[in-house]
Amino acid sequence: MAPLPPVIVAMKTIMIEQNEGHQDPRNAL
Image 1: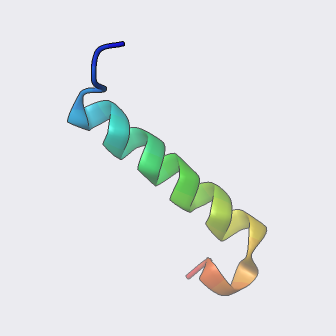
Image 2: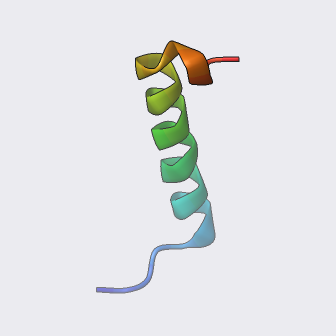
């Protein structure tokens, strides 16, 4: 498989951070 472009990695990271923030109210600032 070809390596993921940095943009895709950044988007996935942002989505994961947003999901964790919604799951844990302490992280939602």
